[in-house]
Amino acid sequence: MVTALVVIIGLAICTPVAVAVLLDLHGQRSFAPGPYDAIVVAGCRVRPDGRPTDALRRRAKKGAELYLAGLAPKLVLTGGAEPGRRAEAEVAAEVCSSMGIPEAALIREASSRNTLQNAARAAELVSGRVLVVSDGYHTWRCRRIFRKHFDSVETAGSTPALRPRIRHAVRELGSIAEHLWKGQL
Image (cartoon, rainbow, N blue to C red; front, side, top):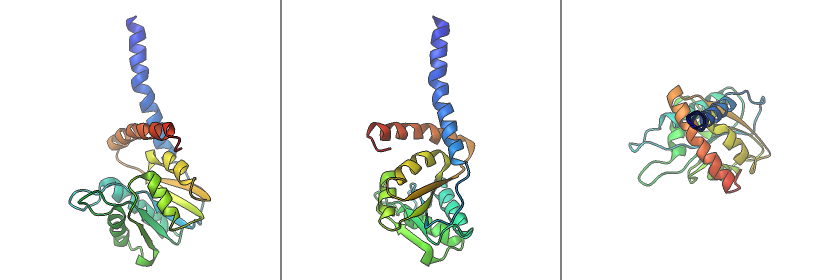
């Protein structure tokens, strides 16, 4: 009886962690070569003082690096503002500008509040083949959501430090389950 309970508890703990690791590995895989019509950076919250969170900075930097590598002529930054905060797209644009991205290449989508809206509203601004940038653990869901709005979607994952990677990847499982339940994936 005790052995069965230990096995059940072990599976309950290990299974989500194993799936989270697989999500993270998915985000680190290679993507098809360019060119793309646009690179789209998935939004992420902004700190109360208006600075980017580590995740938003990482995503914006990865998008800028891919743009500078010549993979697309446009860089779409997504994400609106929580009450009392700056828009995610504006803060990400500042990160990209500091890396030398020309203003003419930056497209801001500053009204979306989640990944579903990031995809739908980005599709109102650009079309065709896109490369979506987010944290590695988030790319599996991004790819499925953005495919509903674009002809072709590839993803590129940024890599957080190990501790937040595990914590956020496990949390991502809840988001995936919710989207599956609602028929959104």
